[in-house]
Length: 315
Ligand code: P6P
Image 1: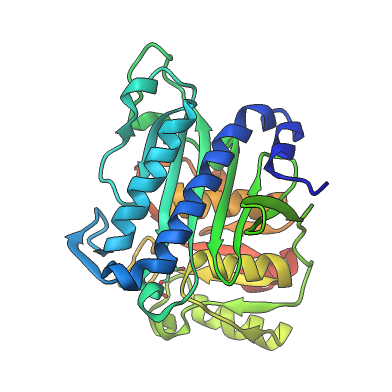
Image 2: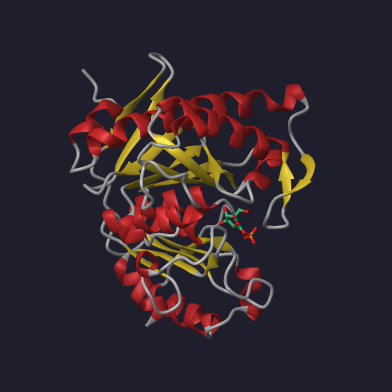
């Protein structure tokens, strides 16, 4: 009998509480995947004619994925609020405002890949509220370092539909099996190779990078001889790095002076998974999981990957 996401209930101290929430993420993933597959026939590709808090053009599918994800989090009954890339403010789930957990989410990461049929993803992180259950959830409930994360992971909408997650006891990959319409354990105990793999970065920004990262990358390339792969969707670049080794980086530059990637729903969940898989997750001079968040949509530089390669890059 194949192992399903039910086995999350047996993982660590939080598995039993996290299983229904991660199963909710799985339901959202299945629905979003179906929407993506048929989007071209429904005229659902392209811009929504609106901007998110980041000032980025929202794709129609960004907005729809956000709605689907919120609805599935509501239906778990375990989530009191959601912080989303697509919503300026914290979204309180009124009928469950007494519940214990909050989710931070990038509902459709890399959506600029959609109109070229490239891979995209969903990134999520789950934290326990700090406010009393009798109070209304507050944005301060989301401002917790990665060391407080209860569970985190990502969905990859690629040739197969994968959900990779950790509840603090290693990293496990589940692949959707269409024959039985459920996620089944396909990648137990994922560990990043100590070295090898690829470096992954948008090298066109190199001349603008802060912290001398241009010279550091040149030195790392000379030292390691790594090849380069870059998809432009963090989930896809992270997943390849996790499986093959190497380093994924998005440094700060003159345009994104504090970095482009968002701390709470991109850097921290990916950093949590990376550390759980035996890798390293750094920002500028500090481990990503040690950063004390100050704002819901805060951005940070990101360096994720094999210990050897991250050390070779950052020195
Ligand atoms: P660039 C997608 O927009 C995203 O937030 C991440 O998924 C990805 O890693 C990065 O931005 C890509 O940015 O500047 O290379 O297009």
